[in-house]
Image 1 (cartoon, rainbow, N blue to C red):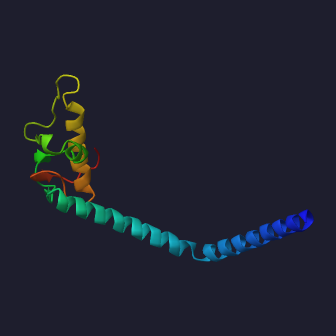
Image 2 (cartoon, rainbow, N blue to C red; image 1 turned 90 degrees about the vertical axis):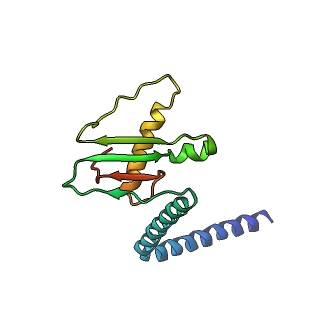
Length: 149
């Protein structure tokens, strides 16, 4: 009765452990292959998501200017990618013009909850999205390759 059940349970645990150890040994031989496959799938998933978003939300291809041209970030009708989805038709696009020959920085003022932080994050997100090779939520974007945000 109980002794046989305890013996069967112990035998099952031993067999399970041996099977698991065998699996881990087999898996470890191909670990680098699995890791490379997972990395490739992750990159493909990311690219597919960016492509789908770009198509469905009417994103545009950013234009990068040469190093010989003055430094600039020029965004026309920029949209915050998350807020645009949440607010849908109620989102108001913003223009941004920062360049070495004039407006190189901006002082953003306004009341609490007026959108200052959202505007700044929008410019940063559009810049980062452009740097990683994504299309961006705007009617046009022109900027340099950036080394920091």
